[in-house]
Image (cartoon, rainbow, N blue to C red; front, side, top):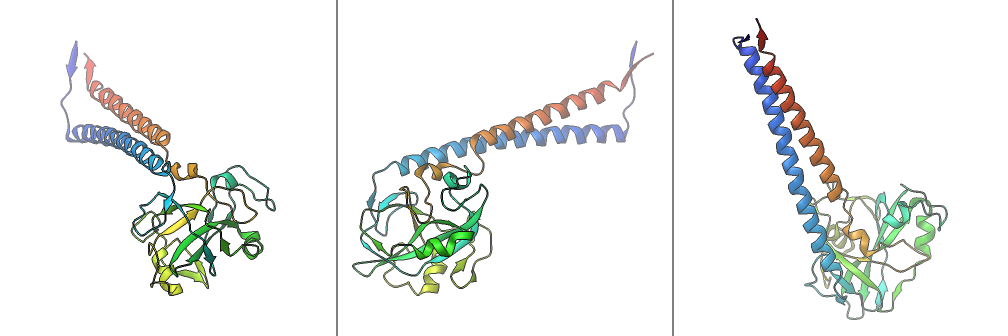
Amino acid sequence: MALALPWSRRDAGGMAVFATMSAVAAGLGVWQVQRRQQKVEMIEARRLSLEQAPRQLDEVARDWTPVRLPAGRFLKPSLVGPRGGPARVVGTGASGSGGISAGGLGYYVIAPLEMSDGSVVLVNRGWVPMRFAEQMISRLDDSVNGNACGVVRPDESAGGAQTAPSGNLGEGVWIRVDGGAICSHLGLKQNTLSLGRVVDLVGGETDGPFRRSLEDYVQFPTSPLTHSAYAFTWFSLSAAMAVMTAFRFRRRRRTV
């Protein structure tokens, strides 16, 4: 016959620990499911924004909105980095401009664009690899003919995704795209459009800095598929903990 042995405090404590771990793992799995749904919605919203026709650049342009840059001339650029470049460069191990390899580091070229009315906007002209930064920047044309398109991007402020400390590493070299700090450093507070924001030049084949494609802006470090994998892992761990808890409970019974 089966006889239930009396429970000790140690047994009860062990059961509580296993049950708690199982519940926590299940909760983390649910959280990853929620994060996946949020990421899907973020990607869809950004894609819809990027698919809009380019509009004229003004002070009310929203983040991730395509804009058309007016004619003007670029002033002395600043560099942001070092960091990885656009996916079409570092993701494929392209060697088009001097043998750029996958995973290489470089700088984004951030330059003030002065327009005919005297107003200024910060523009990300693209990414240059470390080894060829000086050479590629020296070949840049300072003029804009009015046909260039870009995307308004949010500032990488201290409260945003970038957590590196603010400031420049050297003359004209910055840790992150801190538009407000760059504008202040360059004395551009007067007549500066979208102060603290930057317009990324996109698309087009050039012999200068490598630009992002519109598709790059809907790529996140953690994709919905990754969130699904995380959720599966946590749910599997929760189930394993539940089985171990049940097994531990059944061991309290023996045949006499």
